[in-house]
Amino acid sequence: MSIENKSPDVDVLQLIVDAVHQRHGYDVLALDMSEFPLTMDNFLLASADNRVQSRAIADHVERTARGLGWKLHHKEGYDDGSWILLDFIDLVVHVFLPDVRKYYNIESLWSDAPMKKFEDRSAEETDEEFTFEIAPSDQG
Image (cartoon, rainbow, N blue to C red):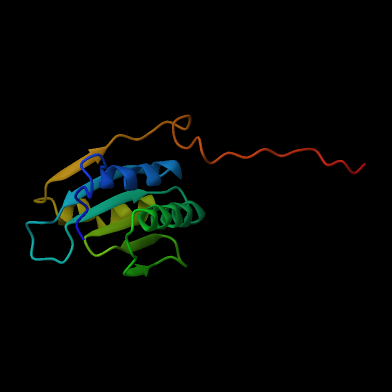
């Protein structure tokens, strides 16, 4: 399954990037791996500020992908949360803590791959659907 559009009206990669942004992921970068003798077509790299946030991003990406009809083939690093890898066969999503991302420097390792940087979204733009209200208790 390719991340290319199943329907001409749907940009699947952008939907996954939106899922990352909705959980406040940032520094999102896509690498086109289709010209390399690998099994995936794209890497998507993202950063998170802490382990809880990296898990929230991974969970939301997984739910979004499932909603698009994708199946998760493999997941690594979820318990630790410093580098979570979600393998959807044609797309591999990496969610890093900043120091871990800097240490492994995948961008440099695959610097000859075409890259697309996605602009970070401000806090106001990130997720209108993820709101809740706390109502006062009726008990005195």
